[in-house]
Amino acid sequence: MQFEEVSRYYEKLENISSRLAMIDILSEMFSKADKGEMKNLVYMTQGVLGAPFEGIQMGIAEKFAEHAIEIASGYSHEEVLAGYRKAGDMGLTAQQFMSKSKLKAMGKKGLTTNHVFEAALKIAKTSGEGSQDMKIKMLVEMLAAGSPLDARYVMRFVLGTLRLGAGDATIIEALSKMATGEREAKADIENAYNICSDLGRIAEVLVEKGLPGVKKIKVSLFSPIRPALAERLPTSEEILHRMGSKCAVESKYDGFRVQLHIDKKSKKVRMFSRNLENTTEMFPDIAKAAFSEIKADEVILEGEALAYNEDTGEFRPFQETIQRKRKHGIEEKALEFPLHLFAFDLIYLDGEDFLSKPYHERRTKLESILTKGGLIRPSDRIIATQAKQIDIYFEDVIERGLEGIVAKDLNAPYIAGARKFSWIKLKRSYKGELSDTIDLVIVGYYTGRGQRAEFGFGGLLAAVYNDKKDIFETITRIGTGFTEKNMQMFSEVLKKIRKEKKPARVDAIVEPHFWVEPKYVVTVRADEITKSPMHTAGKEGDSPDALGYALRFPRLVSDGIREDKNPEDATTTKEIIEMFKMQKKVKIGK
Ligand code: ATP
Image (cartoon, rainbow, N blue to C red; front, side):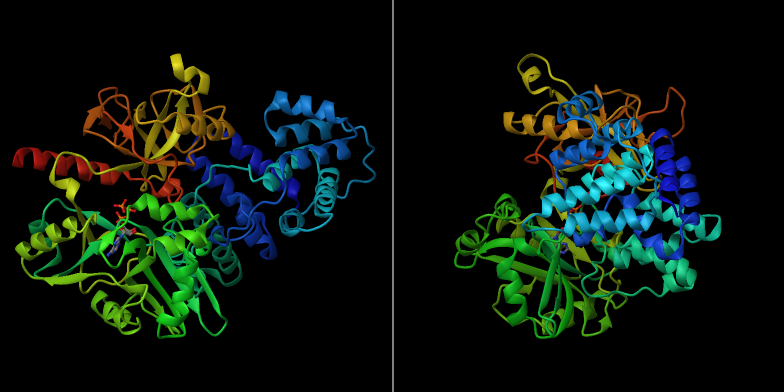
């Protein structure tokens, strides 16, 4: 497939305002791809150079990209810089300069999709002496070989600023439509996605082996499984009732979720975060412990990493654990606060897939492969048959500085990528007013007045994720809880992802000063969930009387952006509706 065709589809995607139109355009585009380029086309559309969990960084800096435009078009540095300042986007700048290029295009060769993808990958991987010149040269060749419109998208792709706004759920529907003409294949593709998290691989299997091939995709080492998530209920009675007469109750550690993959034979270990980023470098001590403490060769297990003082039995706060995201000084930190991995699930063991086995069996096996007293140990738990037992355990856990409990259905399989009642969390906060935190996606922002004017930042417009419709619905403006430092940070990072008009997957009534691509998640606390005509969260129908949900007195509690959550990991509309009901019950109870 010529890249020129892809460019035209990308241009269409930029100009539409509905998610359904997005699916149509994507499925038409996918259906034109050859078998050998399907995988790359899907990655490219996601704006990545491989499965996202591989974390391959785009490899060229803006100033070198600018330089490539100068060479490819024959304009001076000052001219290109002035053009960029005016356009505010390197893709548009490339397009403009290539369309008035001073250099004669000698029989333009054109670009293919694979060529663009592979060259971008090469640019990313080239390093060492003289690598900048080589990167620039490769980029110049692409700019010169394609059309001016191609230049726009080539440039955005290599800089990592493509941002077509198609989330994974949208791509899944588009693939389903391509394969069956309808949404029939959606559930099977989703299942495969939940166990391999790799849409490029799925798309390739889909065109090569059809849907039966997709159904056969199995758990494999170093391809992370999408995490199982917990539902909420307000009391231990309700939890036990929902579980039957008996359930497991585990401590809920407030640390950093880790999915650990290890293959001892090839000496390889890898860890993934909740949103499946490769976080192996954050936990060198756990990586080392995995080789000596796990009594098996090939394992995928899950747990919560948390700084823990074994002598005092004291758990360290989440902030301390997360500091390890900063790569510097990790070794020292590792010594100061030994991190433990409290393992709570087993997904794969020596060639055997454990996903469909019941919890009690996974747990027993998990305990049997861990060495006692090490850094990796099973999460603490009890088996409860009475609500009273759950309450006592809950109080005990809170006293030890933990967040609450997670109750688990003894007979349930591991349900990848879904929030189900086979896991139910109970935090201290549900017992009072609404003080559980909510994770929101930033969809717009306001410029500040007074003191805040200097930062160009006055607050956020934030949304929840409606996973049924795969859109973001606004729920609140956030104006408090910001430090000077994070106002500055928000103003800088949000400026880079501004959108001229409302993004296609955002549903809103209120207008912020600037729309942004839904990309970043923040955590807020609010006093209450209320109903409001101004917000679209949970709003049914278009009647002017219809009400959505809103937050009362929201304030930012995360220290800036939640790097371990993707936009689709934010609190969902459905959860807000459930929390609203729970809040009413608690009020009546009082
Ligand atoms: P939260 O912000 O409450 O952690 P979340 O949306 O990240 O919520 P949930 O599914 O709501 O995730 O809660 C489960 C989370 O709790 C897991 O992602 C995991 O990180 C953490 N956790 C801590 N201890 C356990 C445990 N014993 N079993 C399962 N999850 C646990």
